[in-house]
Length: 218
Image (cartoon, rainbow, N blue to C red; front, side, top):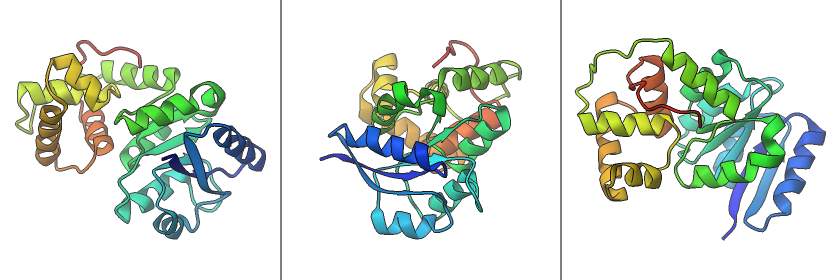
C-alpha cells in the first residue's frame, strides 16, 4: 500500500514540482497539498496521512507553529521539514516542536525519497550540513551529569537515537532485538517525561545529555 503524504509548501512552483516527483513513484500517494497551514489541524484530522512534508516559512502561520498544532491534536506520524534554512535556531525550534527530520530544499531531488523511507523505518533524516551543525553544536557543550537516572544502555540508545538511527540500526549496533530497543526507548521516554523520539532527541540536545563519543556526521 502506498505511503500517503500531505504536503504544505507556499511556493506554488515548488509544490507542484514535489507533487510530480512523488507521483512518479508508485510507493507514494499525495493526499493533498496546500499553500498555507491555517487549517492544518482540520486537514490532518480529515486526511490522516502517513507522513507530512512541511515547509517552515509559510504565510500567516509558520511551519514550526503548524507542527506544534499537529502534535497537539495527537498526530504521531513523521513530519519532515523541507526548508532553505539551516541555522541553529530554526533547526532546534523545529525539533523541539516535534519535527521528525529536516531536509534542505536543495537536496529534495536527490534525498527526498530516501528521507521518507528513513522516516518510515523510524529514523530522523537530516541534510548533511544540518547534521554537521547539530553535531558541532553538541561538541561545543559539555555533557551534563545524567540527572534522569538513565542506565548506561539507555544512554547508549539515546545517543544512537540522536544520530538519527532507526530502531533496526540501533538493534544491530548493540546486538539486541528490536523489541529490546523498543523497551529501552519506552523507559527513556518515561524517565525524560517525553512522548516521542523527536521530543527525546530535542531534550538530549537542549540539555546536553548525550555523549559526544562516537558521534559522526549523518
